[in-house]
Each structure stands twice: as structure tokens, then as C-alpha cells.
Length: 65
Image 1 (tube, rainbow, N blue to C red):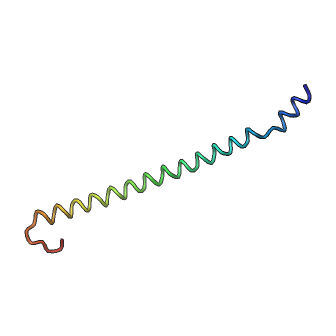
Image 2: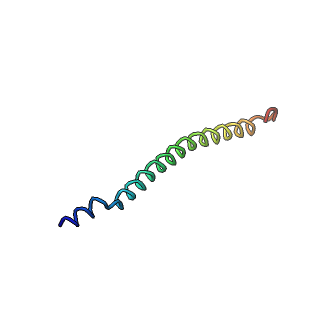
Image 3: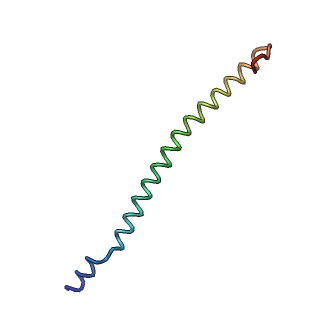
């Protein structure tokens, strides 16, 4: 019984799994944050482009397009 408890105390395999899970959570949060930030920027750029195209096609002067 003593040997079992000593082996259990020395076993560090669970610590590695916990560390990997923590790293995965941090990386996942970073990817989610970047996707949210870039999604907003891309959406804004596409809306501005669409507005410019619409303005240029509705005006007949064509200046500034």
C-alpha cells in the first residue's frame, strides 16, 4: 500500500495533460479574439466598398470613382 501511495505522489502524467489543456485554452481564446476583431474590420471594409460602388454607379459624372 505504501508503494502505491508513493508511486501515486510521484506520478506527473496528469500535470502534463493539465498544462496542455491550459495552453489550448489560451491559444483558443487568442484565435477567437483575433477572429472577432478581424471580422469587424473586414465587415467595415466591405460596407465601405459597397457604398463606394453604389455611389459611383448611381452618379453619372464618374468623378472620384
